[in-house]
Image 1 (cartoon, rainbow, N blue to C red):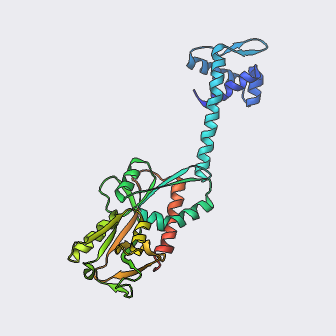
Image 2 (image 1 turned 180 degrees about the vertical axis):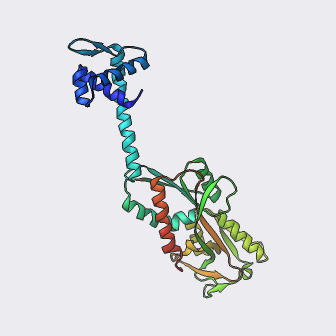
Length: 297
């Protein structure tokens, strides 16, 4: 059963005459009659009472008429939805990101995207790198922003940026007037750890500097970490993007010695074509990474 056959059927039902219906459809009457016979053959029952002057629907024809209208409406809506999606006049884009990126980079990129494509529904989920990777792999989100390595799943990856880690200290901390500080000299300090891959990086760095850090608090909320540092609870090793804007009550210092860095990548499921909205957002995000991340804080 093809959609065009249903369109022919409904027109014949409305006109109650194959000749008039064929004229409205710009078909030869024989062609219309043939398509109706094929449709009846597929369904296994007559759809019309064929009279000399008028053609009316059988009980089966009446039943098909109700469903045919619905099917054609659904097909029309589906075509429109696809057209809207391809023209970025509709559809939905779901993103996943680690908190530091979602808080410090994505708002500007999302605002720029929505300015041009307001009708695309955009949703954002925050999680650890492993969680975001799982969401992308399962299809829950289309684009994910993570700090590698990712141990599970098959993805297409592109590097968004590389950045150093910095030290955030209270404004009146003993080291606050210095521009750079050695991590080894902070062995006795309490630390506020930012959960996720950033925590793993900070912990490894402290151990490499020869000490086990004294953890005063851990939080997955960036604003909480910054507020606790400002309150004097401890110091924090954070990715530079988390300190791009001035943090009230805090000072940002560079770390001496071996450069402590991370890579942030954009991932999507391997062998899955991106939707038009995802393709455009990826380009928008890349532009903002170039403009914002490459600048010195």
